[in-house]
Image (cartoon, rainbow, N blue to C red):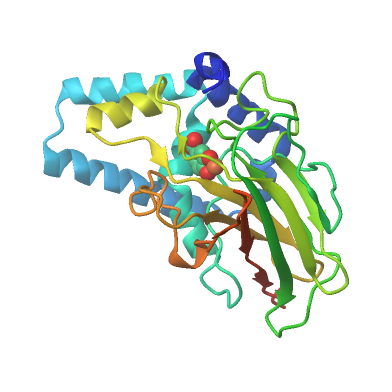
Length: 286
Ligand code: DHB
Ligand code: FE
């Protein structure tokens, strides 16, 4: 573990995830035309689920006050992006992509940053000279659902380092470390050199950690690579890829693992691994 471990606090990663969300998204503009009837229906259903839980579980005033204090704390810690992406996003993703015939996706999580450095069709993701971890070469092809190769498709990759930390969300890591954009060649192919990421523990020293400890859960996500794959006329694919044998593939805290997202890495004599994994994008529906 590097010395980053001591200073990578929940407050730091929570606050940067919240700040990043505000920078990248205009969430209210996207729903500005929502009719009141839709808001009314959704708000009522969520409140009804809360009311039902209180009645059925005979929730006490002490528990209600603890909940209030905890909800306030989540905001103060800047941990709403973490909370929502870990315990809610996977169902939103399921509903948003259920019509697709191409590759499976999964949650984005809180640590995507757009416009990572361009590395062409074949290249090495930005990393430190002494970056720890097993070197990995990943080859793949991007096609459309009809089998046509998609040249000029963008494969945006981001992942944690060998200590489980993401650049821009933990201190002491170069800005674009382990973040890169690759553009497929005329045959839709790409080749990425990076390192194998480590399993990731969601921050345990903030309010999400407090919930995890109080409920007797664990905070682990299996090791994963994040990608966004895009091409003109096709739906954006947001996915994560996992490594077979990781003990948390079956009990990911974020419920984001799917069998289709497991890689099949091949160990090489020099200690590196190679992996083949490609993507099939769905054309935009008319
Ligand atoms: C969280 C972190 C991740 O790396 C991820 O992929 C999903 C969620 C989180 O801390 O909330
Ligand atoms: Fe992640």
